[in-house]
Length: 265
Image (cartoon, rainbow, N blue to C red):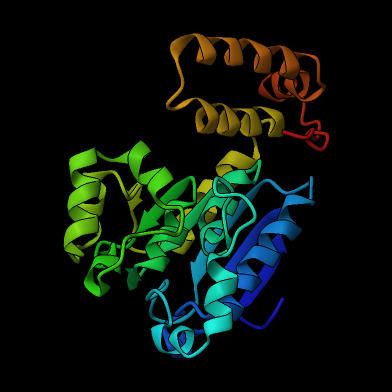
């Protein structure tokens, strides 16, 4: 990892901070590569309970560092190239990679969250947003479409007409409107503190159940009803065969046993 990302782990909660405050955390090739490296590192750590994603300085992320990337043709090729059309490229994995993690990811959004910054935040499971945050699907301003994987989340959390309008118009809006559209899970005057509280609340639940819920909804949101029902049953049987479900019951009865590391989901 480069110095573009700060990673700290506290009480099994990973704190991931975009760390380019002098450039408003704008995304250059190093930032893309660093985010992907962090995602791969976190995926391998089975004891983690949650990830909090934030930005250093006055902004969460102001979007692409257009000047840096336009000067770097090789870098642009690295961002967009992929082996298989249906697999994410480097530009997309900085959003989709958070969806792949088997633990909840909470984005604490403040300041500017534009373009690629919003695409990254959309990859999180939850977004706590400052009321005065400035948010935009900014790609339309530059004659582009959003192509960093955020479309997967937009189709799940807001109406199609809203998603189309935001992507066509590049409208800039605040946290209140983000909440109305479903892009914000909640508003918070201190998004990072709110994210910490949310992560701590989830950390007392069975890691197997939390991972299964995330996978269930991620894979089933647009499936046929029969597929959803089959998946519910399969996941529940898998949970019941593990130790953490019994530990969860015991904890509710006053037995403060620790959960065992979650299985692979």
